[in-house]
Every structure is written in C-alpha cells, then in structure tokens.
Length: 104
Image (cartoon, rainbow, N blue to C red; front, side, top):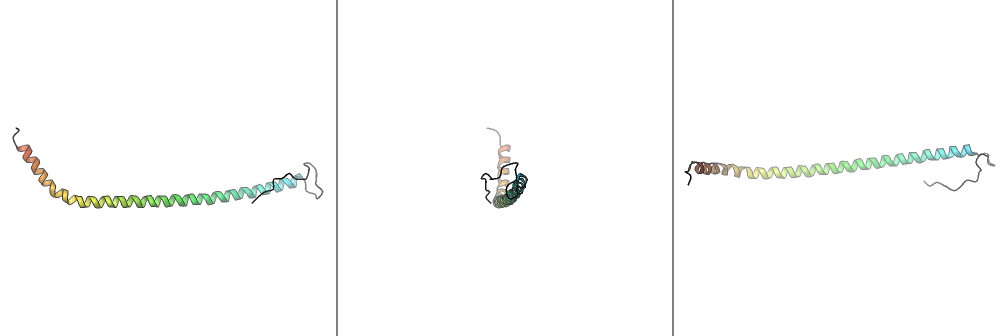
C-alpha cells in the first residue's frame, strides 16, 4: 500500500471549504496508521511462521544426520566386536607368559 505524503491544501486550525478540518485529517491519519500497523503485524506473524518452519526443518535434518551417523558407528562396532573378543584371550595369554617369564 502506498501513502500520499504530499502536503495537504487545508490550513491547520481552519475548516476547509468542504467541512473537513484538522480533526478529520487527524482521524484519517490515525486510521491509516492503525491499518499500516496491522499490516506490519501481519507481516511479522507470517515471517515468524516462516522462521519456525525453517528451524523445524533444520532440526529434523540434524536429527536425521545424527541418527544415521550413530547407526553407522554402532554397525562398525558390531563388526569389530567379535574380532576383538576372539583376539582378547590370545593377548591375555601372551601377557601372562610375559609376566611369568624370568626377567633377563
């Protein structure tokens, strides 16, 4: 919406020829200001909704990425786990032999 900001032809403090005075102009300006304020509030609401929507999308994406990474790490640990369990007794036996052998 555009507003005409050009000077008015009526003189402040006097009635114009068609009966509209300063009070009528003040009412009109007040009404236009209220309308403009409502438009600003509506725009702020719309932008707020957009920000909330974008934040929600980003949070969901972050959650999905974290879930996928953790699932990948858990799968890797499951693959490594059995191999480590098989090697562990061998390592323990080697340590026992080393500890039991006389120092040179």
